[in-house]
Image (cartoon, rainbow, N blue to C red; front, top):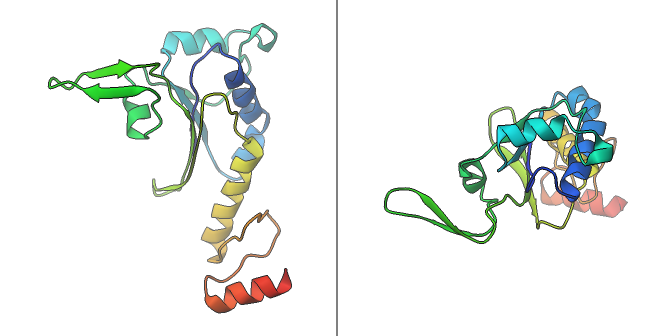
Length: 173
């Protein structure tokens, strides 16, 4: 699963990312990978955004699920909640600053283990192609038991995670 966070509905960078994920959705599905988005907006805001045409700032046509984290607990649990916050003695979250999610992306394997994570600051959009590359790398490792060196892409050779494997790889490059 690719589980990603974005700051808010009806903003500027967020629809470019969500539409980019939608544009590559068949590539994720071909790899048997679900894509799920999440923000701190309400389900009502998500619904309105999903029913607004892209030319009007919406994301109409997006088919993957978008989770509402109105309580901000999912964002806090994944450590992507922006702003300063603390819990009162009653367990209530109190904030200083804007309580929105950073642009976090988590690649979660079939056992529920986070195998890759990256967090971008609010103004920095992410690369959907890089998310696909990381899916390919994880699947290559799971299928072959070999690790993926820097700048590895699907179809490239992996290497054995040994001193000899590194030496052999570096000797070829």
